[in-house]
Length: 212
Image (cartoon, rainbow, N blue to C red; front, top):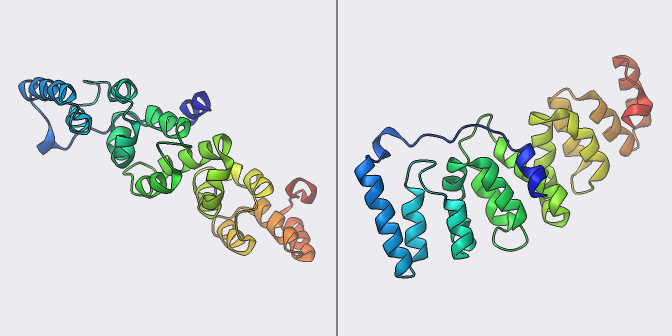
Protein backbone atom coordinates (compact mmCIF):
# COMPACT_ATOMS: atom_id res chain seq x y z
CA UNK A 1 0.00 0.00 0.00
CA UNK A 2 2.74 2.47 0.95
CA UNK A 3 4.89 1.62 -2.06
CA UNK A 4 1.93 2.06 -4.38
CA UNK A 5 1.13 5.41 -2.83
CA UNK A 6 4.65 6.68 -3.39
CA UNK A 7 4.54 5.55 -7.00
CA UNK A 8 1.19 7.26 -7.60
CA UNK A 9 1.99 10.52 -5.85
CA UNK A 10 2.94 13.52 -7.93
CA UNK A 11 6.62 14.34 -7.62
CA UNK A 12 6.21 18.12 -7.60
CA UNK A 13 8.96 19.93 -5.65
CA UNK A 14 8.06 21.26 -2.21
CA UNK A 15 6.40 24.66 -2.32
CA UNK A 16 8.78 27.40 -1.18
CA UNK A 17 7.87 29.38 1.89
CA UNK A 18 6.32 32.77 1.16
CA UNK A 19 8.89 35.56 0.92
CA UNK A 20 7.95 37.09 4.24
CA UNK A 21 8.20 33.77 6.11
CA UNK A 22 11.70 32.65 5.07
CA UNK A 23 14.11 32.19 7.95
CA UNK A 24 17.71 33.32 7.95
CA UNK A 25 20.37 30.67 8.72
CA UNK A 26 20.67 32.04 12.24
CA UNK A 27 16.91 31.93 12.75
CA UNK A 28 16.77 28.38 11.42
CA UNK A 29 19.51 27.25 13.79
CA UNK A 30 17.74 28.91 16.72
CA UNK A 31 14.47 27.25 15.73
CA UNK A 32 16.12 23.82 15.75
CA UNK A 33 17.53 24.47 19.23
CA UNK A 34 14.14 25.59 20.50
CA UNK A 35 12.59 22.42 19.05
CA UNK A 36 15.11 20.26 20.92
CA UNK A 37 14.34 22.13 24.13
CA UNK A 38 10.62 21.62 23.59
CA UNK A 39 11.15 17.87 23.18
CA UNK A 40 13.18 17.75 26.38
CA UNK A 41 10.22 19.35 28.15
CA UNK A 42 7.84 16.84 26.52
CA UNK A 43 6.21 19.63 24.53
CA UNK A 44 6.12 17.58 21.36
CA UNK A 45 3.40 19.65 19.70
CA UNK A 46 5.43 22.82 20.19
CA UNK A 47 8.50 21.08 18.75
CA UNK A 48 6.49 19.91 15.74
CA UNK A 49 5.27 23.44 15.00
CA UNK A 50 8.83 24.72 15.19
CA UNK A 51 10.17 22.03 12.86
CA UNK A 52 7.38 22.66 10.38
CA UNK A 53 8.41 26.32 10.21
CA UNK A 54 11.88 25.38 8.96
CA UNK A 55 12.77 25.39 5.24
CA UNK A 56 11.96 22.16 3.41
CA UNK A 57 14.73 19.58 3.83
CA UNK A 58 16.33 21.10 6.91
CA UNK A 59 14.64 18.77 9.41
CA UNK A 60 13.12 15.37 8.74
CA UNK A 61 9.72 15.93 10.29
CA UNK A 62 8.53 12.48 9.22
CA UNK A 63 11.30 10.77 11.18
CA UNK A 64 10.53 13.05 14.13
CA UNK A 65 6.87 12.01 14.10
CA UNK A 66 7.84 8.34 14.07
CA UNK A 67 10.45 8.69 16.82
CA UNK A 68 8.12 10.63 19.09
CA UNK A 69 5.02 8.56 18.30
CA UNK A 70 3.35 11.87 17.52
CA UNK A 71 1.45 11.14 14.33
CA UNK A 72 -1.85 12.22 15.88
CA UNK A 73 -0.42 15.70 16.49
CA UNK A 74 0.06 16.11 12.73
CA UNK A 75 -3.60 15.48 11.92
CA UNK A 76 -4.43 19.17 11.55
CA UNK A 77 -1.06 20.11 10.04
CA UNK A 78 -1.33 18.01 6.89
CA UNK A 79 -0.79 20.82 4.41
CA UNK A 80 2.40 21.79 6.24
CA UNK A 81 3.60 18.20 5.92
CA UNK A 82 2.62 18.09 2.26
CA UNK A 83 4.61 21.26 1.63
CA UNK A 84 7.70 19.36 2.78
CA UNK A 85 6.98 16.21 0.75
CA UNK A 86 3.65 15.22 -0.72
CA UNK A 87 4.73 11.61 -1.59
CA UNK A 88 5.85 10.97 2.00
CA UNK A 89 2.73 12.65 3.39
CA UNK A 90 0.52 10.51 1.16
CA UNK A 91 2.29 7.32 2.23
CA UNK A 92 1.83 8.30 5.88
CA UNK A 93 -1.86 9.11 5.46
CA UNK A 94 -2.57 5.78 3.82
CA UNK A 95 -0.46 3.68 6.18
CA UNK A 96 -2.31 5.16 9.18
CA UNK A 97 -5.79 5.62 7.71
CA UNK A 98 -7.17 3.20 10.31
CA UNK A 99 -5.75 5.15 13.27
CA UNK A 100 -4.06 8.56 13.33
CA UNK A 101 -5.45 9.99 10.09
CA UNK A 102 -9.18 9.27 9.64
CA UNK A 103 -10.31 10.16 6.12
CA UNK A 104 -13.13 12.34 7.45
CA UNK A 105 -10.47 14.67 8.86
CA UNK A 106 -8.05 14.34 5.94
CA UNK A 107 -10.37 15.01 3.00
CA UNK A 108 -11.46 18.56 3.99
CA UNK A 109 -7.83 19.61 4.35
CA UNK A 110 -6.84 18.16 0.98
CA UNK A 111 -9.84 19.83 -0.65
CA UNK A 112 -8.17 23.13 0.25
CA UNK A 113 -4.65 22.11 -0.79
CA UNK A 114 -2.86 24.65 -3.03
CA UNK A 115 -1.70 22.10 -5.61
CA UNK A 116 -1.70 22.07 -9.41
CA UNK A 117 -3.87 20.93 -10.97
CA UNK A 118 -6.48 21.67 -8.29
CA UNK A 119 -7.56 18.66 -6.19
CA UNK A 120 -4.68 16.50 -7.48
CA UNK A 121 -3.57 15.58 -3.95
CA UNK A 122 -7.13 14.71 -2.97
CA UNK A 123 -7.45 12.51 -6.06
CA UNK A 124 -4.21 10.67 -5.33
CA UNK A 125 -5.20 10.22 -1.69
CA UNK A 126 -8.67 8.83 -2.41
CA UNK A 127 -7.32 6.60 -5.18
CA UNK A 128 -4.76 5.16 -2.77
CA UNK A 129 -7.33 4.89 0.01
CA UNK A 130 -9.60 2.88 -2.27
CA UNK A 131 -6.82 0.30 -2.62
CA UNK A 132 -5.67 0.32 1.02
CA UNK A 133 -8.89 0.82 2.95
CA UNK A 134 -11.93 0.43 0.66
CA UNK A 135 -14.47 0.75 3.45
CA UNK A 136 -13.05 4.12 4.48
CA UNK A 137 -13.05 5.32 0.87
CA UNK A 138 -16.66 4.30 0.18
CA UNK A 139 -18.37 7.49 1.50
CA UNK A 140 -16.30 9.57 -0.91
CA UNK A 141 -17.32 7.70 -4.06
CA UNK A 142 -19.35 10.63 -5.49
CA UNK A 143 -16.32 12.90 -5.17
CA UNK A 144 -14.11 10.25 -6.74
CA UNK A 145 -16.36 10.15 -9.80
CA UNK A 146 -15.69 13.87 -10.29
CA UNK A 147 -11.96 13.50 -9.65
CA UNK A 148 -11.49 10.54 -11.99
CA UNK A 149 -13.43 12.33 -14.72
CA UNK A 150 -11.32 15.47 -14.39
CA UNK A 151 -7.87 14.07 -13.60
CA UNK A 152 -7.74 10.41 -14.69
CA UNK A 153 -10.58 9.79 -17.17
CA UNK A 154 -9.16 6.41 -18.20
CA UNK A 155 -9.78 5.20 -14.64
CA UNK A 156 -13.40 6.33 -14.39
CA UNK A 157 -15.02 3.35 -16.11
CA UNK A 158 -13.15 0.74 -14.00
CA UNK A 159 -14.17 2.70 -10.90
CA UNK A 160 -17.82 2.81 -11.95
CA UNK A 161 -17.80 -0.94 -12.53
CA UNK A 162 -16.29 -1.73 -9.12
CA UNK A 163 -18.05 0.79 -6.89
CA UNK A 164 -21.66 1.12 -5.80
CA UNK A 165 -21.34 4.22 -3.64
CA UNK A 166 -22.30 6.80 -6.26
CA UNK A 167 -25.63 7.90 -7.74
CA UNK A 168 -25.78 6.74 -11.38
CA UNK A 169 -27.74 9.80 -12.48
CA UNK A 170 -25.21 12.20 -10.98
CA UNK A 171 -22.31 10.16 -12.38
CA UNK A 172 -23.90 10.28 -15.82
CA UNK A 173 -24.06 14.08 -15.63
CA UNK A 174 -20.35 14.17 -14.77
CA UNK A 175 -19.50 11.82 -17.64
CA UNK A 176 -21.49 14.00 -20.05
CA UNK A 177 -19.78 17.15 -18.77
CA UNK A 178 -16.36 15.67 -19.54
CA UNK A 179 -17.38 13.95 -22.77
CA UNK A 180 -16.60 10.45 -21.52
CA UNK A 181 -18.67 8.34 -23.86
CA UNK A 182 -17.75 4.88 -22.57
CA UNK A 183 -18.77 5.89 -19.06
CA UNK A 184 -22.04 7.31 -20.39
CA UNK A 185 -22.82 4.08 -22.23
CA UNK A 186 -22.13 2.01 -19.12
CA UNK A 187 -24.25 4.22 -16.86
CA UNK A 188 -27.15 4.35 -19.31
CA UNK A 189 -27.14 0.56 -19.56
CA UNK A 190 -27.00 0.24 -15.76
CA UNK A 191 -30.08 2.42 -15.51
CA UNK A 192 -31.98 0.26 -17.97
CA UNK A 193 -31.70 2.74 -20.83
CA UNK A 194 -30.34 0.13 -23.25
CA UNK A 195 -31.72 1.87 -26.34
CA UNK A 196 -30.04 5.16 -25.41
CA UNK A 197 -26.78 3.34 -24.68
CA UNK A 198 -26.91 1.55 -28.03
CA UNK A 199 -27.73 4.78 -29.87
CA UNK A 200 -24.82 6.57 -28.23
CA UNK A 201 -22.42 3.73 -29.00
CA UNK A 202 -23.47 3.54 -32.63
CA UNK A 203 -23.39 7.30 -33.08
CA UNK A 204 -19.90 7.55 -31.68
CA UNK A 205 -18.57 4.40 -33.33
CA UNK A 206 -17.81 2.78 -29.96
CA UNK A 207 -17.63 -0.89 -29.08
CA UNK A 208 -20.73 -1.41 -26.93
CA UNK A 209 -19.38 -4.64 -25.47
CA UNK A 210 -16.18 -2.93 -24.31
CA UNK A 211 -18.12 -0.20 -22.54
CA UNK A 212 -20.37 -2.67 -20.77
